[in-house]
Image (cartoon, rainbow, N blue to C red; front, side, top):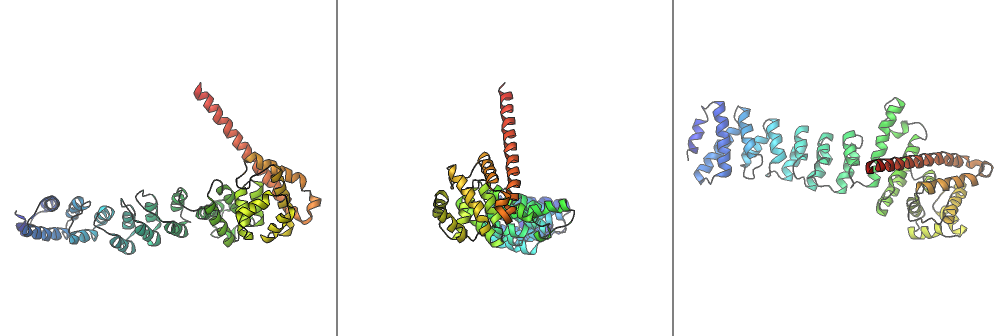
Length: 388
């Protein structure tokens, strides 16, 4: 071949000729069976072309080498040091770049190159963990949107910790089915802060900045909306998370009973009392008031709430409720109405806050039931219209 003569010719050729030569030489390197002399000469010519004054020459090399597994290492790393559009193409596609090479890029280069790494056709769990640890929010969005990326739970947890405040990252995390219930709760709580910012007309960065009761109320609603149809292990992780954050409150437990989240209630009582959940379910389903009273004391619930819990559980027993499954909306409404009828202001004394809560909750459940009924009715009408 005439490849050795390229080293001299490249010094005087015009830009277009060098671009054409770069493409032809790169294809020859990839496709031809070069002898040792020509291969050495071709490698030298390619390295000279990487340092060419014309960026179009590097783009021509990139077009040929981006997906090749035979790119000379010197050429590969030379292109990575070039213009962003060339480097990004190589970072996103070159099969020769290992996790170690790519992690170095994450730490030293800009956001656009980080995004290229996060958008590679395959991203290993180790590389995904490095991106979650040190890359920008935009790069982490690319990672979460990449179907070829592999995640371990620790990586998702780190993304929640670093970028739970970022709308784009948070939205992608909430769309995933593999984040834990505790992480979903944290993301929804952060989302609530943004909503509250608009409602109260000021920038709120901490729950403590919100009016009294807003965080607690929202936290309860998020928990009780999230725990339906989840695994026992996920429930336990959430309960532990709520305990550590001080949000596994008597109010939440009472609301769980009244809205029919009986699985959550039983597992929370188990965690608080350190009694196995199977035994807790037996106590809740049994008729011995002393056992129920002992469970409430062991769980550390305030004495002033015991009457309401005992009454609620007694009503559930009379309805033959199963504490291993949740109630439907109609069952929850019936339970709350019975409690309201039984608990009178004069009987409660200082426990009027519990009655106030029950009244508000009864209204909430009635609204949910009405919406569910309306939705079901509209779906039936649409079905009838389609059949006609």
